[in-house]
Image (cartoon, rainbow, N blue to C red; front, side, top):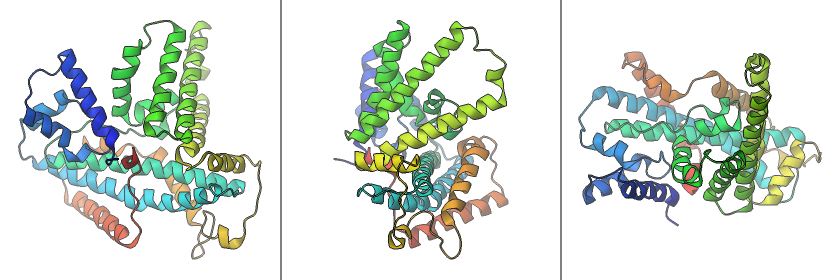
Length: 366
């Protein structure tokens, strides 16, 4: 199958539906070719509409401020991908390769494996989104934000408003609303929520892991909506405790751990591997592996350091303590210090890319 076939398929579906509805009225064949072949976002999003791109194409001009911003955000994205995401990929791949062969990991190794993939996916997709927007800015094109610190979400609903934002917009406009959205009964609304999440899982792949992942997210969306219904019916949705910091921390812990565990099904090559890893995470299996197997794994000491622990702590710090890199563009102004910082990021990423094996973007597979 062609690389990332679903992305340009979705984009053309949106174009055809908008034409049918009369949203897009003025276009010609060359406009269409430019719209569907604009390479910065072609193979992994963001999924854009004809109406938000063509006016920009027709008013192109050289803007040095946009070019400077584009170089910065592209360098940030490249650094995230090759220096952070690919480092996590090494440990995630090692751990999953063992459980997929029918072996088991102990609790610490299992959690390190799942968290490594959780952070790999985060920085891989965040890096791609930054690079796409950066490349667009080099041409004077502003692409929509597609990623907004999703691991800060306090609910599964908020997560999907922050993760792959344009895919969520597509599914809402062309699936959820046509199904009835929330205009019908509460039961029909729950059905629509589940179907959208479930089909999002099927979109990623036809394997059982993706199907289970989509079903779990659909169930979580429904449970969160039911929870809101209950609070509203009891007139508790404005309760003081629900506004407290403790409640928000508990919500984050629940949401993040749900995401971390469901990503296991998303990543595992086979269902047995996912179940083996989850069994290790919950202490159902406590198996000490031979040193020759465990040494490449996550908790091995390399040159006297626990690299995995360091990277996992770094991952939490970057995810929770820093704002989305796109937000920094609003206040960005080209300076000598900024140019040096950008150059260091870009050079470090290129050097790291040259000395480590290439790992393709995860969303290139969909």
